[in-house]
Length: 185
Image (tube, rainbow, N blue to C red):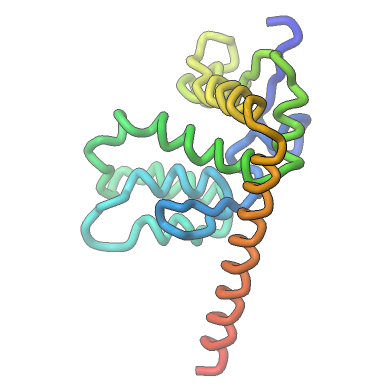
């Protein structure tokens, strides 16, 4: 596909589109800050699971790769509706990432109407499988998010950017206070 936008690694051109890209997001559903969309997505596989707090373990994973590894752990109890909800969960966290960061939204909007492809042989569902025969669901979701954001009034986007910044700052302050309390104990 000529003139398509291809991405995979966070350090490469369009690396901002990777779920491993560090852009902490605030999710209204749980009121928490997630280090990356990968952390959030992987954790949602275990919402409602009995026993250990799998969701929180993934949320606080040191890296998105660590979160992904935990999310792929099949000894953990995968939620029964995962196959039905996974696309919507990805859609929601990717939308939040680009709604909450003006600079990331500008990169996404800057692709115009170009086709977006997650290009890797490592994934045939979320990516193109490296040969263009994969489903490329993440690329499709990014194009949907681009369309949604481009249809929003700039003032509405500005309000969301500011709201998200305030939420991240408040959460960071709360985390620092809790950490200080832990050191004093």
